Amino acid sequence: MNETVRLGSLAGVRIGVNWTVLVIFTLIAVVLATAQFPQQFPDLAGGVYAAAGLVAAILFFASLLAHELAHAIVARRNGVDVDGITLWLFGGVARLSGDAPDPGADMRISGVGPLVSLLLVGVFWVLTSVLVILDAPGIAVAVFGWLAAINLLLTVFNLAPAAPLDGGRLLRSLVWRRTGDRLRATEVASRAGQVFGFLLVALGLLGFVFLPGIGGLWLALIGGFIMAAAGAEAQHARAQGSLEGVTAGDLMTPSPLTVDGSLSVSNFVEGYVFQTPHSAFPTLDQRGRLSGLITLNRVKQVPPAERGHMPVSEVACPIDEVPVVSADELATDLLTRMTGCPDGRALVVEDGRLLGMVSSRDVMGHLERMELREPQSAGSR
Image (cartoon, rainbow, N blue to C red):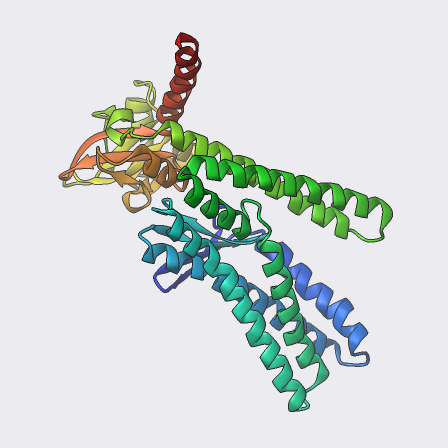
């Protein structure tokens, strides 16, 4: 899930939010302020309910952020790069740009999130108890009581042994440790996730039919997301298996055509886009150094009236947002890094010299060739 707005960074980890956060944030604040709190504590001013709902929603997302930040920090300590954290409709996700090096690291990275959530449950429960002892207003007690309860509920749910939940990743690490096969472990966790997601969808639809409200539809939506995410993880794991031992140098298109970043977009279109079959070009600054990557999709976003005076450098993806790798970097690591790149390409560089470019199409072509080879090999035996 891509970020819509970047909030900054914490502990060196970039934090962003997707626009879908507004949906669940508003839903939580509104439901608490207009339904739950007024039922518990009638006859309070409307502003009090609104403030309580807003505080609860903010602290709820702060809890999600703490959970994902724990994943990110432990991942870095175990040698896994982290692209950032994105909060979105179903909570949050720490975007790791690589895989854990061993089952122990995988377990530590997966398990620390639920541990932090349980710690927060304890913190909110203690705060609730203290407020009761201090005879604080009931609605203040209710805010922290709700935070303790919702964090406990989410922790228990998140520990279900089904990918992509943390419980599924813990299951993967256990199977990985027992079998020594990460691919098999991922497929086991993914199948569990698909079964769990299907059960949630079924229960949600039954609840929608036989129970009042739309809670069943929400449960079905969550189940559908889990099924899709689990299937994607299994597909990603199979792709990594097919890329075992392959390097960026094996996949790259050598010596890609480069473009002067000071060239106008219109001249670029006439001189490069219409004259070559390529759809992406590395850009160079005035000193001949790599400065970014220009693609046809980015050119399409420039209104025709502005192309004559707008330089390519203003349209291109900045070089610090393009994966830059060495020729001997493993394709399994490259695939993860390219997934987070909006232009789906990586530049292969050695000693400051551009050697080639790898696109998602190059990777998919290799995977398709491997699929053709495997049945052939099986038949020859």
